Image (cartoon, rainbow, N blue to C red; front, side, top):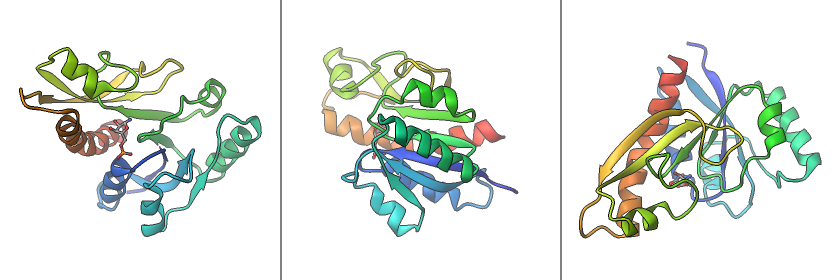
Length: 185
Ligand code: GRF
């Protein structure tokens, strides 16, 4: 199987990145992780780039010069899909329109509920019985593109933000890989 080439954008701990790298090492998984981009050198997830010897780059996207240079990089590396995995910046509209391939994102709620930040806190406050994660295509509005896959978890009476996060992230790690399989099937 000729694998598609993926670039993962991160800002933080990179647990989704790690799960995707693991999946990509399976023979039947449709993509390889060929490039990692972070908007900050403080992203601890960059350790996975180093550990698995995947080329990476740290840059501030909102500078026009960087936008052009990253588009050039992605083209040169023949990237077929960008996966936002805890990327905490809103993707520049110009970038979205200029990158002609797929861009997908993972979000820790059952969209369209709880777009944006603090999703666990808000779900608890509203006494939700169910929450979860969503993988979706990225468009120029926040957390709004077409949904690819969702996974649900039950909110128990004694759940805290931390326990919800742990349960949702465990689902995320499977949801992201399953979504990629479904896109390229
Ligand atoms: C995930 O919960 C994801 O849904 C959100 O940011 C978090 C990133 O976690 N967009 P990690 O960096 O993959 O550990």
